[in-house]
Length: 208
Image 1 (tube, rainbow, N blue to C red):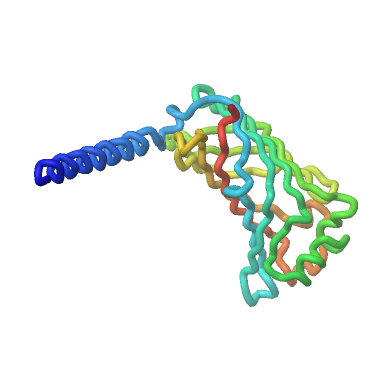
Image 2: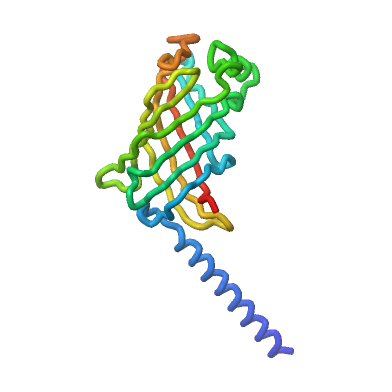
């Protein structure tokens, strides 16, 4: 009986050791080096991708909300980052300001005029990696919002990439600033700021 217990304990210890080793291997498979990322076409995981916006509200506070259910496709070429592309579609009816009355107002012609302009879109034109900072890049593209198309610059940070469960993922953060008046959204200016700050977060899954 004692021999059985000892063998069982040793088997359990071996299993734990192998499990720990597997965790180490899985962790080692993650990379923060952009050059090691798998090339290909990626789709945004909408459950882990959103755009947080913020404006100055009457000088009293910085008001924040989000756009959710964003769809985006990333074509990634680590060997030639300038050849990478990003396109995105934002369903404006899915704006989430955490206030039902404000959401209803944002959908009207005072702001997004969702009946006539249900989505905003972005299409990159250039990707430039920062000298000396391979995990940071400037992405310039065309944003179409409220029926108006203007160039927008996004400063992007690569977080990491690697296999998680049954998917290969690449994660990024981005920041940008736009003026809503550039897109014909002038309601409550200047009490509510013209400048809108955007924080973009995204986990992209490599297409199988």
